[in-house]
Length: 423
Image (tube, rainbow, N blue to C red; front, top):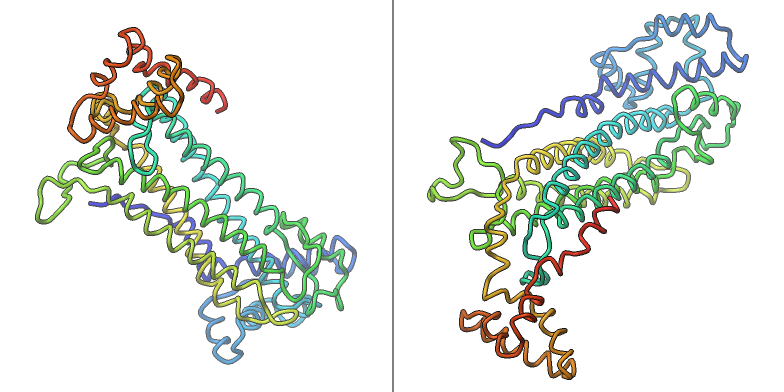
């Protein structure tokens, strides 16, 4: 059975009840800000804070008439607050002041979960990399055997990509965690700009330098793109696992639980199902990033074309990356590393992957690089095409001492420690 993950905490952020809770948090913060600035008395805030509540079913009933979710929300809250204090709620604001500022709070909470997921995955990969620092394996270019490397070195590249993805994501957060309380066209026509500053301070957001009726959507596109890039990093190594799991390679395997089946017809199969799943899900994240970019272009100071898109791509992308990070961490923690097969694959065709070292050694024999290349290529292709031994072929051209030097894996890996020290 596939490992199941419960991502309830992330999903809850995007539920309707939670969404309206964020709306209320913004409205209360605005009132508190106006109290702090001397516009309202504190009893206004205390009374509204103690009586303001909402019911999603009631909001739905009102919205069927108003056809406007924020107005429905406000009418429901005002029903509970009463006529004495309801005029203080939403005074001088426009709907998007509440929507976009509340949206930033949703994104903030969702991002805290994503960052926690990333920290846990990064720690897992780092530990694996150092564990396999000296686990010799075959490096490949164009899918073909190239030179000897270590599996820890391979994992360091994944670690570096994950760390960059986190840094990129964190940087984008500084741009998107902004609020606005600026009125119908962003000119503060009926509200003091200081209210925006104080409200954002209360909510832990930065005030937007400028807003129209909304906060510009290039920020949101960058955020969704940053999530998509995290997905791309996961996919990159998921594909690596799939390649290394192939029957004729078999250097790693996904964890395979007792009783698990790989195929209904072929009992021998142990498929990299989680890695395949993660590769597919990354495509959805990339698609969502395109939709987010399409949202940047709006009519004049605002239209509503972006709203329906965001109601899909933000819950989907944040919930999905939360799931992918957790599942990928599980894959890495349970990855079976077949060290003997890794060594075996480096030894194919009589250590053919040490051809460059032989090439360089022959140039010390008063041969040009072109002449040395021709000799080494001839002997390597002979071993490859005739299932022979490259090391035996090269004994015709190099002494035993030179052979020992050229076919020495430690020579190739002498700088691995230097690379690891960077991490």
